Length: 378
Image (cartoon, rainbow, N blue to C red; front, side, top):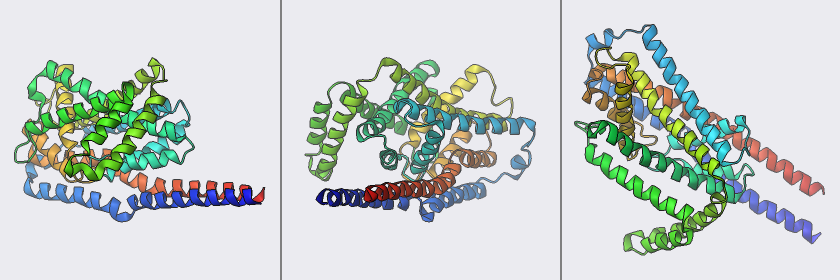
């Protein structure tokens, strides 16, 4: 009898932990967390349209087969990006999740990024979601940390290569905004140091990583992060034990799927610019498109510093400024393209996540209730 009571107490504690975490996640899908980024983005777009309105240029937009084809290509690339992330999730979990489940989980992950500041990302919600899918604590921790490393690795390898090929002209000079070339270089250096530190901890010396992380928090203004640094150090040690056991083809697949996901994200913008820019402004030759892609990837490095949820409001303004600065489009048309970009790449994840997350939580709760009932019946 005492053993059964003990099992019920354990189940009750687990349920309470789940409920506490569930409440935190449900906070992210409250309507204000979804509506505020949408209103912020649309509000900025509305102001930009008012401030930069060019009736003749807007009226001259040709909504023809050419435009719709390239908008369709942009949508296709967004779908491909989602599939690439789902494939990466299957690689990192050694096919633990089905394709259907992986696609669903990526929607949740992307939603959590969409309602978090760009500089923060959605790893916290992703960690909770994966921990409820019976993946195992070690694998879940390893997956989250490894994605940080492999994402950073993509930028650390791609940006210098593009600077070497196309030169410093790919770095956006955003006139009239607080962002500029200096922001790009500062962000890239910080990204490199951040990624290299995690790479060192994950693959070389996780215990030393923990020691260094805790040492940093001994500084007076960082003392409040000391407990978090200890937990991060423990997570790195756990993740290192898991990841260093994987074979080389695991890392190759993880990097290539990551590269495909990021590459398609930037090519979406290539397609939208091709759809609306004049042929004499933007050519379809490989060099021109490669240089445009390099500029767009450099632009995203700057966007990583944006403080609003998913970069809402700021991203539209920065992209519009980028289009005008490089003379791809006029001010009025560039605002419309910026809006279409966000309608394709950002708002769908806000809406999909708000629908999927409550449904996913409900299924988890039903599963736990069934498990509890079976335990009590024994």
